[in-house]
Length: 314
Image (cartoon, rainbow, N blue to C red; front, side, top):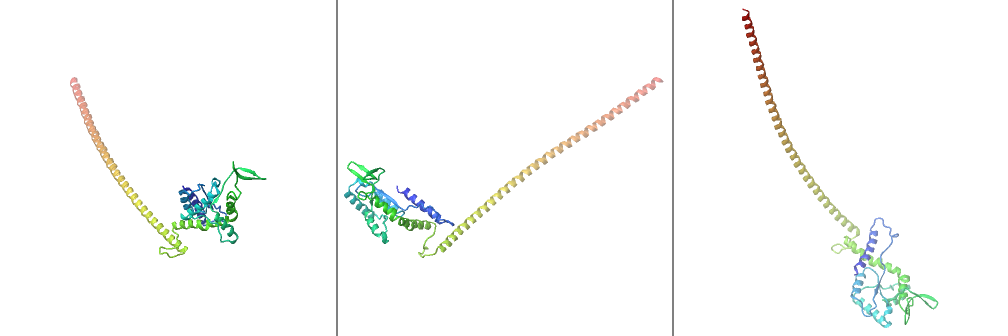
């Protein structure tokens, strides 16, 4: 799937864009991780491009400099390879896939680049083995029928590819990445953020106008959010006040209940105290009456004894 590749390329563009958008940017010290070239290896089928290859390259051609390469080119004959290159070029053109073309506008490299454009797609082979060929050790592949040298231009296009990428067109690859692919990504991202080159009536306007429009839009949204937060705060205050009033009402009701209960208990105690006082007073009265009767009885008994004594004396 091409999605991981596209996401990775976009991630590098996004990192560079974020650095550009900083107030204090240090691009001269920034480690640029943008992808400047995509070497797209094509299987040496000798027939045509796979549908997946066409779809993938179509998705990538607006994001990176694509250089198509036929891998393992020693798997097919020279005549088949020539026909395969023509077939690939034809299919790329018919499907609208834009591959990287070496620039011919600079006179110093126009001739060599024009020649190399005719060799696209490059056909390469690879090897990790070093074989002694003549008096030199060279990267090569050993077969029963002979030896294929990686750096022999008669055997493959590896040297042409290396020269075109590293020696001749490295700066142009970087420039194409920055001025074409990155600028396209940057423009799309800024449009998503609301920064466009034209207004709704397709009339151009300045960045200052864009800034003012975005600022006013932001302030409007901020004001709406502040109003919403204020309304929410007022609503919460009202709800809290209602809760406090309800709690206060419950406290008053509880206080009234306790006060009434206290008054009832106090009245009961006062009634009991009054009843007890009445009983005490009644007891005292009965006691006084009993003492009086006892005293009278004693006096009466003493008088009778005295009378009997007088009668005896007579």
